[in-house]
Image 1 (cartoon, rainbow, N blue to C red):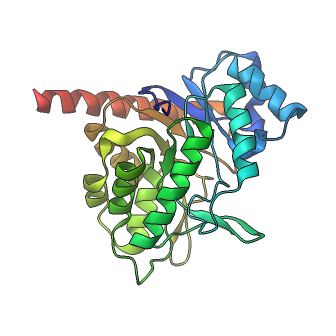
Image 2 (image 1 turned 180 degrees about the vertical axis):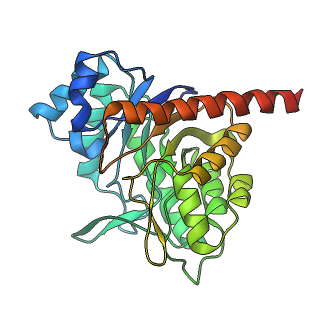
Length: 283
């Protein structure tokens, strides 16, 4: 029996080293923090010590970047053991990773590579998700990726792939609103159709982030504030969702903590307005 992901309606930030002291020495007005799992998967050392201290003050979500859930080689057993040890110690709110792959044979790209949305790929991903969830003893969340190319042999949309993944494995979703926007713009898709196709009852967490406009594509860089169009998409998503954790994700050009807290306040306010509107419509 797997431990289910909780319904949690808090607001949080990604914990980055620039703000360690703030979180350890002051009362930061957040409901949880999220950390990159791999940064803390080595036993001992200063990062793990800091995470233990932070965990005494705030719930922690673990967000991975190296599980390689789409790997045709299967999952790395040693990686799963290290992750399980971290999960057992921290007792996280959520454990998540990306719908992507990064490893084949002895090669690791250290990047989130895209998956073709085919039945064969779905079978592989489902098998790997079952392995990961069994190893951890809990339901995981998987994040929709930013997309910069499309495979000619894909036989389903991204949201259809994610829906099938949830249905077959019992996993839940981390819905990255910026990634939906980036993917929609890059491929000329309808972001509203994407939201229509997502099984909203499986969404447990939302990411909000910024992106950069390249010469031809939007790039998911996490080094900019959340843009107005992503806020609009977030507001629409909140009208469709029940209790869900929401966080601001910033990984580069990291500003002072107050700047991120101001963005988090926007998320709170938009959610409050749109949740109220949804309840009125339902009535």
